[in-house]
Amino acid sequence: MGRTVVVLGGGISGLAASYHLSRAPCPPKVSALLCPREPPLIPFSHFQQKVDPGPRNRRPLFLHTFYPTAVGGAAVAPSRPQVVLVEGSERLGGWIRSVRGPDGAIFELGPRGIRPAGALGARTLLMISELGLDSEVLPVRGDHPAAQNRFLYVGGALHALPTGLRGLLRPSPPFSKPLFWAGLRELITPRGKDPDETVHSFTQRRLGPEVASLAMDSLCRGVFAGNSRELSIRSCFPSLFQAEQTHRSVLLGLLLGAGRSPQPDSALIRQARAERWSQWSLRGGLETLPQALNTHLTSRGVSVLRGRPVCGLSLQAEGRWKVSLGDSSLDADHIISAVPASVLSQLLPVEAAPLARALSTITAVSVAVVNLQYRGACLPVQGFGHLVPSSEDPSTLGIVYDSVAFPEQDGSPPGLRVTVMLGGSWLQTLEARGCVLSRELFQQQAQEAAATQLGLKEPPSHCLVHLHKNCIPQYTLGHWQKLESATQFLAAQRLPLTLAGASYEGVAVNDCIESGRQAAFRVLGTEPNS
Image (tube, rainbow, N blue to C red; front, side, top):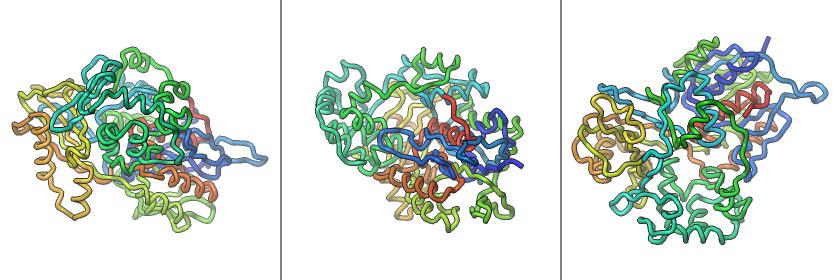
């Protein structure tokens, strides 16, 4: 009888793990149950090699290979595990959710575009091709305004971020001096000596206070909905941290690079490179991806069970897991957890209390997403969207100009679509005070932001409001130490547990898909291909 592997979480990480398990040379029988959302990957267990989350490797927890040990120390690949994927809600996809409006317009309630760059971007495009979705892809090509133009809203006005050498050599508001001088400062700044540093401190030290308080503050709000004075440069922007550690200069490090990693190849990947795509979506919305994964898993004999929240995990005498589902339970030889770290911390047994404590410190913040549609309206600029530094507006993280990037999703007759992201200290304060977080409050705040920052003063023809509770993990200062603590405990205890999802090493869709892929190969005991 083969081993049983239970995957917790039917978000994109858990789906990706099940997908790669189902495509193994000897495909396992996969059933799917599902749990609360998802996190990124740290493979542990009764494995020979110890994880080293060193400062110079973006994905140290993903790239090491682990194999169960046989008699005499030989590595053996496990054969044909049964896989059970468990989801607590009634739908798949986690935070990826697309809604079609009455006129056919597509509104994204979560992620709205995926970057094709790098090895991770290429692997996601390969998955798209394998699922037969090539014809559904909506690319944003390199010559498109949404690829070329991004803005900051500072001092009551929109400012285009400078691009190209000419943009760096001349003054570009809201910066008081050409960014060339910030680059020159960066080249002569000595290497930092601390094992970690906040994003704000790192940027201010290397590029100056303006870049730190305007550009990086806004970027942290746009990507993590977080505070640059609390987030870790080592964990949030590891390529910048690694560039300084390796080359003393971030600019030199990024210019010289760390070498090209092997990448997959397909017609779609080659097209994305040739046309210099900045991002892409799917014609029916990004939720088409988890829906296609569900269809694929079902066709491969995967049984998908929804609405089955996990109540607890316990270790049996023989070293197997018991997964409690309320009125029933599952036995597992191995668990892939693709639920948030804080959720997993509440499920672990008392024997894993040190691990639970480490995972419970990986917190997440909430974001209110407000989709607005306007009839007969025009934007004052053309681009991907704009970000807002915390000094300008503590409530508005940024506004995405959905109709610019993906006009194919505007509906008929077409209407202007924008998405306002609300969060930051404003939302955290409201939550801490126990205030009523009503739909009306978020809609009013979003409409005021759209009116003030984009001149969209007429009432929207359509509006969707969704509050995503604890949706973005926060990699705060010292996050790497939390991962190291978890790694050491799992290695010492030889727990058959692999972590995947957004809580660990990347919150983007590509990161989560890669974490699921790596988790699957760790369980199969095979080396992942490029």
